[in-house]
Image (cartoon, rainbow, N blue to C red):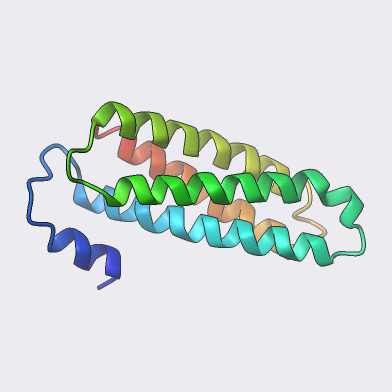
Length: 134
């Protein structure tokens, strides 16, 4: 059982209207995407063609920050507001889509970009899946 599952299972308050499985999946996807984006940005900086990867690095770093912020907001349930959750999820899904598209441009040349694009796609979908339940 993941730490996310453990913490959601032990939450003492009511989580009315929140699909716990989708919430857990989204929290975990945000964490994985942030990690992949940070690692991809770092790997891009080590490439010989780093000048060609400037936009990718910036997009990775922005996506990592948004995913991490989304994960933190989703983790806090006390007094949560569905309007805020929807706004954060929508922003995260959009940033993940942008990052995925940027990484896909380099995926044939750089495996780290291919991996990052996949994690961005997973996170984008998890955000959309959770949004559909709010």
